[in-house]
Image 1 (cartoon, rainbow, N blue to C red):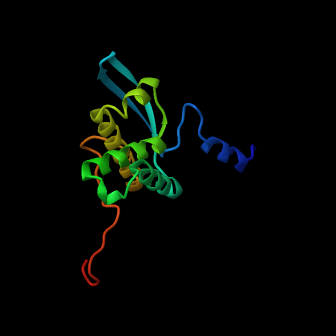
Image 2: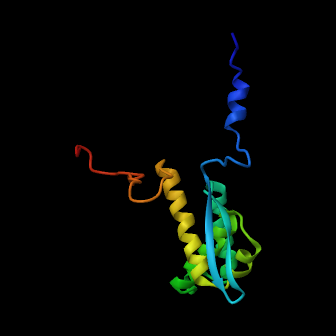
Image 3: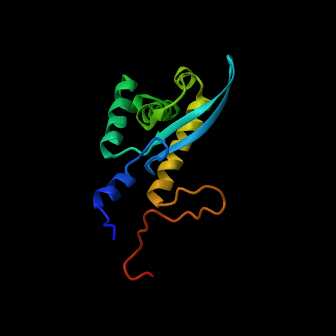
Amino acid sequence: MSKLDIRDIKKSAEPTPDRLPPEVGIYHVSFRSPEGDLDGEIKIKVLDGDESLKVQRRSADLAGCPWDHIPPAGQIRILALSTLAFAVVSAPDWFYRWVSTCDDLLFHVFRVCQEHADRYFRGNLGEGPEAKIKPLVVVRPAGDT
């Protein structure tokens, strides 16, 4: 009779190059740049609490002035750049060259980053119409069912 060693259970749960933790997602990105058509994979992770605070602090640093002096579009751009700086685990070199220059690239990947985090916290990393979205938080008056 072979015995189960719980250390083996832990080892099998540790990420390997072929198996990423669920908070990391791999996405294929195609981008038509002045250099030509570029393709590659981007790994995006869900930020933890400390990283989220770092995003806010870095956004304030990038602003270079009081936050309320920046137009809303600029605030969103700064937040997107700061978020991707912490959430992108790896990407092709061309991504880093173009993400701060091309708003289409920046905001598309930022949206994917937010959607990945939403699916992670909802416990549903599936995509497409069959992926049912459940509310993460529900608050209602006491006594309502």
